Length: 389
Image (spheres, rainbow, N blue to C red):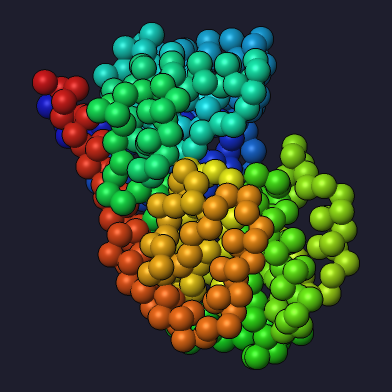
């Protein structure tokens, strides 16, 4: 607490409203209970009210993803004026556009503590790569404390020259938001809901359900997953696929794979839902074959539900499972390796059960959401103490 007993004023800023809400589940009440004044900044949208309902004052600024120089200058001026008036003790920024603008405005207004969480990296070419990489570098250079949400993401950021290794921190074992272990647990309630989901989908107790949750876009590896699934179905008609999520409108899947999901009766499409734990519980094996990721939180959520998981050995996702212990790592974009790993788990129920048990234990020890948020609050406390010296 400051010397004059004024509440420390924290600003958390993301580009879009959904990020301000979904990236910080159950976090804001913890900050408020600790005595912080919390202000959120993001673009306007339906999630703004959801954040406000958690006791956070939200200021909207019309930021949008992508390269929009004139709009960005206007948003930068708006942020400068907001930061100047609010006199924040700490500004925590994440997501590319908000981070770039908040870093500059925060630096110009003399905010004593700038914290930058990097949740992923951007695979672009040409001018877009130069611009996004430059924005990342500026946001990192102006930050007083940098957080990467996984060790392999940190390695990638160092390799790309975003910041030096000694400036990038990984909190605990990483992850962006940990797991609510009460919500993601295989108890009688989730088992009952899972059984109903399977029954309503025409899936029997003897069938094997492969699960996926996330945006439906090529870089998430869904094309390779659909291909491997089709190959497995040729020799095993007991296998089903449950896909939770919606099409990425900016980067949609090729038409043939959209048609495959729409017409195959053994592929069960579920719109994105807040009830994801019950749908994950309805699966037997959970898969995230992403090309690259910041971490891959759905893998630890599935592991918390005692599901064996399959992920790719790429930056971010490799940190979200223990290869050979609670899941299997496969090379990125490798359909044959993915198919082999799936068959190994499909044909071995004992191994599935053991990996599921191992996963729950590992997640409980490393990714309990309360402890993940506790580590972040420790960073806030540390930076606030440092800024007052």
